Length: 140
Image (cartoon, rainbow, N blue to C red):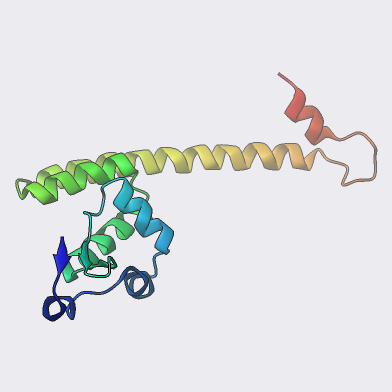
């Protein structure tokens, strides 16, 4: 879609979108490629132009990613938002499932921390040629 000059004054190019949002240009391209962002309008010179709605959608996508939502979870959220046929209960359910996943990851990281702390404590700190950390990593 090509936009005329009077309309395009209210639109911004991708570089400006990146600057305003704090999002890398390549990330914006990626989100377009995987259809999290719709194809932008273009001016007569072929430059991509982004509306306020595009900017708001990018903020939504970025915030979801900051909160750890996967691309698939984000697609589901966007599908509900785009359809306009969602309830707070549906969004709450998706959020609670995501929270459950996050809590599991935290538990896994704590377990990983304890394991690394234990094998590091067995280390002679470089005073011996044998390394208990390597031994632990190589054992079954």
